[in-house]
Amino acid sequence: MAGLLESVKQPRDLDRLSRAELDELAAEIREFLIANVSRTGGHLGPNLGVVELTIALHRVFDSPRDALIWDVGHQAYVHKLLTGRQDFEKLRSVGGLSGYPSRAESEHDIVENSHASTALSYADGVAKAFRLRGLTDRRVIGVIGDGALTGGMAWEALNNIAGGDLPVVVVVNDNERSYAPTIGGLANHLGTLRTTQGYERFLDWGKNTLARTPYVGGAIYETLHGMKKGIKDIVAPQGMFEDLGLKYIGPIDGHDVDAVESALRRAKAFGGPVIVHVLTRKGEGYEPARADEVHQLHQVNPQTNPETGLPFQVKGTSWTDVFAEEMLKIGNDRPDVVGITAAMLIPVGLHKFAQQYPDRIYDVGIAEQHAATCAAGLAFGGLHPVVAVYATFLNRAFDQVLMDCALHRAGVTFVLDRAGITGPDGASHHGVWDLSILQVVPGIRVAVPRDAAQVRALVREATETEDVPTVVRFSKGSVGPDIEAIERVDGVDVLRRAAKPVGEADLLIIAAGPLAGAALEAAEELAAEGIEATVVDPRWVKPVNPALVDLARVHRAVVTVEDNGRTGGVGASISQALQDAGVVRPTKVLGVPAEFQAHDERPAILARLGLDGPGIAVAGRAAHAVAAR
Image: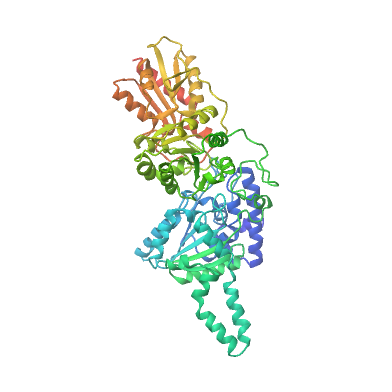
């Protein structure tokens, strides 16, 4: 890092730069991002696309006095650089910068939740608070991507913002994409606006050319100017926003700092709610990103070749890859199976199914609530929908899972990717709530596969269930080797038997899904100390299988292990089942505490939480000691 970027310590340092220097700064920022994010991994394409926009925002507004709120903070790396955070050495690693805005890092960061479509509601609340406190000289700016505008919550916020006179500036960063190309009616509307930028030039032509002809030209221009509303509806139909009561400015070239600054200054001076529609290009200035037609290198892995945008080393088969292959096979076998994605077709593994069966895939945009209820409707219509989302995003659709799917006993399968501890994306992306949330849903069945073979088997079993909703959840990253069961007892896989007679075994370890390997490691460690453990994988964790109660009866103590919150999760349900059956055993419930987990590598977080082999062994010793008293 050198040159102009190094000299920018806080946003007001931008005020002294000339237009030529601003262009130089933008180029330096792109070079910095490509070099650093290629090494650490992170969101590259979105940040390359907002360089000039972010510079203009910080020149026009006075952060943190003016509240700058980013929707989906993966586009806030440039914002970090301009607010004094230029050490990207440990980006998304323990002790380093978060991959999203973070209040702990800077007073310039307000909203650190990286779930989409939320920033405008936050902006509305902040603006109302400023008004009530008499802070009338402060502005609130919500920066939202066109993809995030497909989420219903964004429109709830716009409805409220438009209904008042608060000085909220809504910047629509329109790059035609969320993770992938934006779809739906809103995308079509914004596409129309993008292709009809000729309105102002049309009036300029009338003014500068027709007006040269006395009387006739001037009269024609005055007539055209008087017809402004009607012409705009035809040439640039932004009426959707203006009909809500929002002043509309745009579309603006988002890579022209002067143009963006001019638009933002007009919006700032207006004093009421304004939409500023900015056109940007994801991955701007980086040929490998622009050549990636689908994602523009939305996110890159650590140790990516900056020359090509490709990883230096190809990792092994991921959990998502296994699901993608099995989903395609199920589609081949079952013409009634359809897929639903919330703007993340490839990340959740539905792309192969979509390529083979384009008429049986539905991308609903960033609208998980709609996805769940639409799935219930598809089930009523005689189909079996598979809704694939990140586990953390299922939180947004809980009411629909409960009241629209479970209440109606809809045969819908939810496939939850990135379940459990996910690592570098931090608190908002760890999928550690789903097993607890779903425990309260009557009738729903939940499966947690431990390996690739079980992903295939359990997805099959789930899609064959037609009278209740089903859920299959799996982890992030490489799937690892299969773990063979030595036997199956009423649906429960026994992975290791204690080397003691029935009724004398020391410990039963019940491991949900991918933590089965760590449980087996713990059992071997304990065996070396004379503590014999049986290790089982329930496969289906809800409802609690009665076979688990029977197994607990013939062991002296129990340890449950899950990659999910301890509160209300699988272990809590098993403990309740043992109590209800009158099986009193010392029981240790291992899982994630009710705390937000910071970004770090998944193995490191699991070890810190005692969810690795040594940690499970510690819990096993404690349970055994209580039983031996």
